[in-house]
Image (cartoon, rainbow, N blue to C red):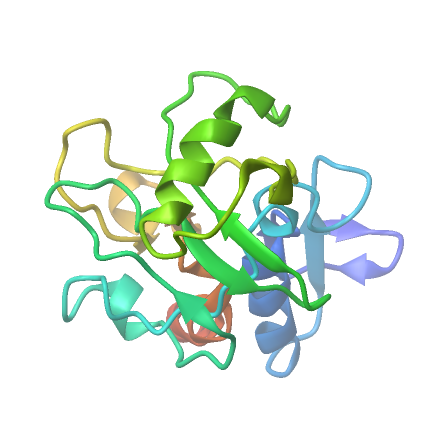
Length: 204
């Protein structure tokens, strides 16, 4: 592939936090890296619509990529105890980067991308938060943002791990696919980048 700046050896598709981490890591090893991004700027979708939680990885199956690639966090976390078969970790409390307490996220499967916040969920959020913060009142809560995770498991299905694979077996040598990079993708992004770098090294 070539462009005005010369030859490109590596294309990173998607300029979210994981794509940026991968490109940053690869730029220390290789020249000629280009981003392909459908939005006008970086981090416009999943990466900018997260709870700002630095996950410890304790809720993921031992040995899974989600558990292995997580890093210990240093933000205040208050998690409810997950129930059997729960799709997410439950509505939890986090101190965000601005010092505010944020509650969320909830989990709802969708069939289209729509970032509108459903303000009708306020009562549901209040009742969930009351399980660990009984004094919370509805007036203290205000809607914030909505995000969409690329979950691989459907409703009622068991845990699905990140999928990271080089696609030579599919007739696409050199293509490294990262699929289902949802939570804890933000926390795991530096380790994901290292993992991808090792796959790139084997391809080049």
